[in-house]
Length: 270
Image 1: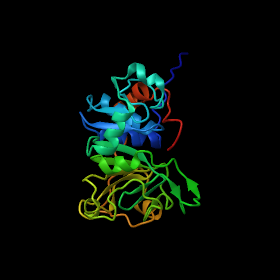
Image 2 (image 1 turned 180 degrees about the horizontal axis):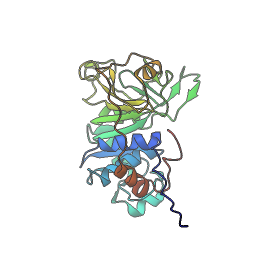
Image 3 (image 1 turned 45 degrees about the vertical axis):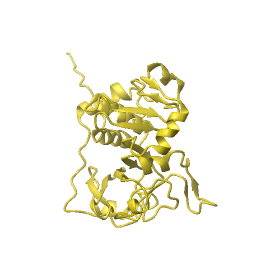
Image 4 (image 1 turned 90 degrees about the vertical axis):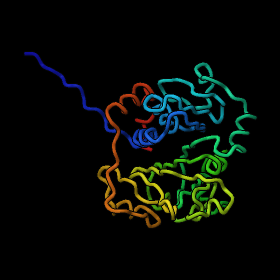
């Protein structure tokens, strides 16, 4: 008797894989980005976009200055091994000029956050009183400049609860839409701010006039009541939110075989 063994079904995407795919879909050919040190999701998103619809997108390593190192797995953007496969290498003075002085030189940045508020301002510094915080984060580094000067930015969080999605961040280090409306521009910042926010519960964008966060889609199995109960402010809702479009078989195949062959994003949920 001959037995046949069927191939196991494809694993469902982890939250990190889902966010990487959703981000990759929104990146355009020819755009420029900068990626920080501990940035597996950001790196995966840019490299997946380069394999799909944006072959001329380029990203530069914030800590190392390497441009578009080509690898089939994720390593720190600060790792010296990136040098051998990079298309170019910029020195630190040029990097600082780009980050701190050139408005809209970078088309986008992708940032994780400890807290995100209803106008897309982000906190990566501390939870609670900054003089005696309950939790200390990695700090600002270039986040303030990138949020202020890039054409747009994306933010994501590993958790979605009232401690992360707050009415007002405890420490504003990444300027979003500030107090809503046109307050960002009246405070002297160039046009820009957050475009999308992603969490394990869904995808969120911002009302074009009030700049308040609203629900763009809910992840499969997530209810409107669940996301409202988990958010520390009133999210805008227009009609019935659609279900987030999950990664296609091609997107997952490219992500797992050409971008993240070692499974860094499969090994963690956020």
